[in-house]
Length: 265
Image (tube, rainbow, N blue to C red):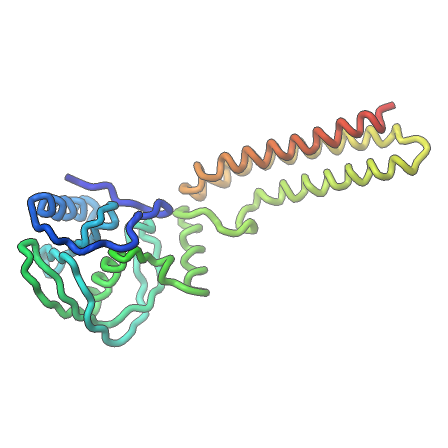
């Protein structure tokens, strides 16, 4: 049975996969499901955590055959290399990682027999990436500093993730402008206490309120357009957008009610 592969930003929910102690038909069926899922998605490897399972299991393709690794443990590491990697969890967005050039590990097969293995090159990198999942590690947890920022930017540009900084959204300029107009409206209210005839100020307040409403409507419309570029944040940000617009209308309404009593001729 083909399993659903978890993708970012949904967490795998696995921080640490405990060792498999019971080697039974349920385990064998799960391993076969991993193979079927791997084939269906044209992947080179798959960890149990990628489908939300606590099994300490990794299945990879090697030399044209499936290799089943149960309870894998990396015992030796040698050399370091810079890699460009992708994984199904992040929508195949490239990450620039530092990996060990070669590793040695032990693992068990489905019969519980222990084996040892030495891997280098692309095979070593594949195993390291899949074993990371068993310990709750992903590109985002392993990358630091500038490398992490570059990867997050790549996620954003590929529409896999929402921008994490407000400056990433052009729509925010609509709200900034709306806030500045409302500040000017509050300033006009203050000025009204120092002029003999405040009636003309009502007209300016009315025009300004139309501008604020227009800017908030433009913010909402542009937000839904902009979110299409970030398919994962389309749902998670829509309620936030609605809340911002409602608050904008509420604030300008309060200002206009006060203005009505103070300025309306």
